Image: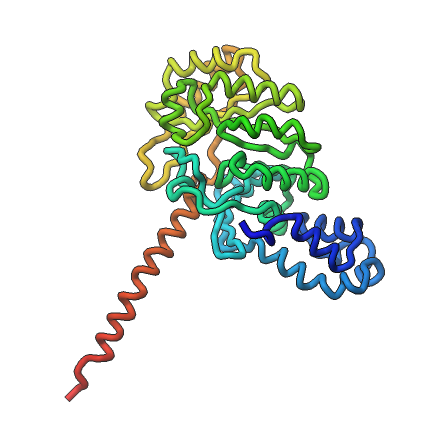
Length: 362
């Protein structure tokens, strides 16, 4: 991770350019809102020191280059999947959700290797800096209003904990997003459960649970921390009660894997009396992944049964199903296409060379 992808780098750049605390706050606040520095109530010429005015175009250029739009893919459900190009040419995904939500990435790739997720196919490529995470919000806000940010995109936030918490702190203060509208998603890591309560901005928590069977969970999430589901739920519940926001338990529905009556019974027992909501999310089918989503009727039966048994359960429509909506699917398709093109280009050059070297007409 480069130092120039982190928020402290830009705070220091502004300080060296002569910015006071309020000057830097204005520059970074308007950037995070997707607005120009000139959008403030006071004119730049009257408010900023001359040295900062001279340095500002270069600093703003660096901020703008952190995350640029590679392509946008609107969905029929009101979502819009964005493929975002970073300054070094890597790409990550952000998803604009209906009702002002935004899902952002914290890593290029992922080391957890969930079997039902395209992001982990190539492993972890690199960490994102805190400024690159906020830059995804700034970019999205140039397209529509964003009031909620969930760290559920590419990557496992607990594996990039310092940068993610720095971005959360910024968004919950300078970025103007309510703390309960910031969501830290994790497969369950003791480091996250330890650090989250210590921050001045305490986000809501989403826990990727997916099954009550510890052995099955180890297979589905092969490199997640070896905590049993009951341990994960206990830790998540403790944080939820401390911060006042219910846990969002995430459950990707896989046909014949975690949609059985036995799982219904087990999850009803596991989550009984817990401060949280269970989100059932039908699997977003992607090329090359050996799973299927259950029939909608089956998913609805699970939700109704659990609700009757006292578990607050919501059956979610997977956002962007018609635009490679599953995490990592869009990037995988684009990377595969670029790889294929890179392999074809030398062959084209050889073919042209053969043609050029052919016998001249008689």
